[in-house]
Length: 137
Image 1 (tube, helix red, strand yellow):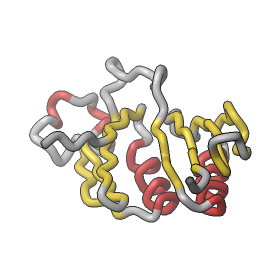
Image 2: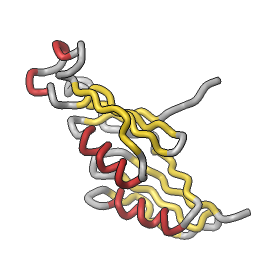
Image 3: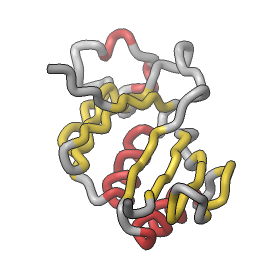
């Protein structure tokens, strides 16, 4: 069986991002491996030892993973967003507000014909998020 997970790339802020996501989503960081503590340390720039080679965050039954991509390979995320499906408008508002702090709002959080709350935001770490709190059917 295939179980997709989300893998995010960062430009040196992976640890800060995962600490923030742990608080924001109420998850639990299960792994933070630095480049310097890995067998791949020799492949990283000298000042990259404290950067994250692999991070994992468990949020319910979803795994959010990520890493600090080497500087020469990093590309800012584009062409996708991470969709967060929520059932409570207050949770949608809380999470959206946290993600929007020092981020960029693309679509303000609002009620739509299909959702109690819907919005797009790119957080301070450059990750695009879509918040959708659907209406009861």
